[in-house]
Image (cartoon, rainbow, N blue to C red; front, side, top):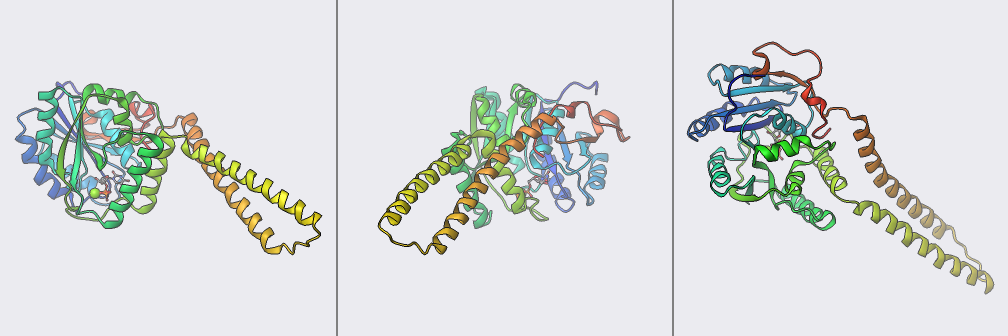
Length: 333
Ligand code: UDP
Ligand code: MG
């Protein structure tokens, strides 16, 4: 790869259709990065954008040599895009943040200081104030972290997103994980590296609209839960058990009714029982399906993203064929 010595800091930024926010982002990040007093690279991961993000990045790159562009061939999702950036980042420290300026770049300085002065491997950005997020988002987020904490016993910082700084050792550990559909905000704490937190105020998205529709949020939640917990499977077993008990009670009732000569009209109860049992069975099957799906995806061992281009590796031409690095499985679908 590149012969230049690795920078002290890599700033990994996933971007999906962020053309409207890109100029604002660059204007804000650049003075901050230049003022850190360390060598750095900005790894902008273009997650298969279909708007002017790719062109915008090339334009910005002309005047900013530390800006490196990694383009994925297709939209691979937020987590996979970060994974691609982690795989390619070369810095001793790697910070990941969103492109929409909800994670203030100014917080990078205290994160780096905390890592260096206190010798910790991970510095989590913790949102001190989420009032800029919608009530729906805050409500679902709270329910999500609480459920994860209960069912999976994960030690994820409540309200920690994907704004964090990691040491080289941590990044190597993450990169070495073969897990498919991993959710970094739970994977990183589970690695157990010494950590610290830095509070920041979550801002409004600077421009454009959220790239996280409800379906993607749901996917992230299911991936998180099935990656860290068998509780849903046990829940299915429990449902089966309760259903079995109910069936025994019903049998007793039916026998007693028959013995005492009462005729059961029974249409309503039959319909309710059939529908209820059907629903429970489908739920249990669905839960099983999520885990089988994860097994299936893992056994296929397909990369969760394909790198089309890396400005640091190629200069300007587009690589053909799958990237050898991305052949190691990582990220989400
Ligand atoms: N993003 C991405 N791929 C996707 C969706 C989102 O790389 O498929 C990026 C997006 O460009 C942004 C970050 O992930 O930099 C967070 O997305 P967004 O701000 O839309 O999510 P929200 O803040 O609304 O949860
Ligand atoms: Mg955002």
